[in-house]
Length: 56
Image 1 (cartoon, helix red, strand yellow):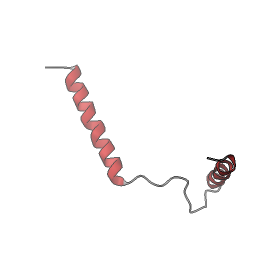
Image 2 (cartoon, one colour):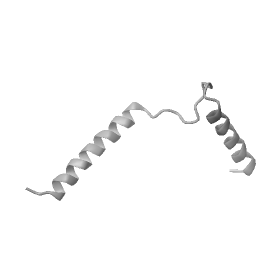
Image 3 (tube, helix red, strand yellow):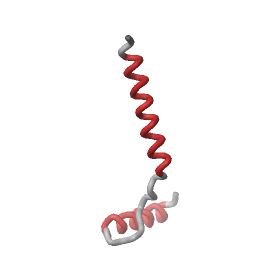
Image 4 (cartoon, one colour):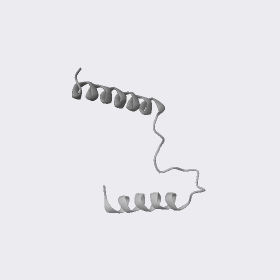
């Protein structure tokens, strides 16, 4: 990425952070499916680690 593009993008993002009344966001929202999938995977991995660490 050329230096001028980087600086322009940095200035744009800083301007977005400094103006809370702006409708534009600097990062898009995560899709709800990805959030649910991450929560399910975290729960499954946690259960598997507990089962593996504490065998009956």
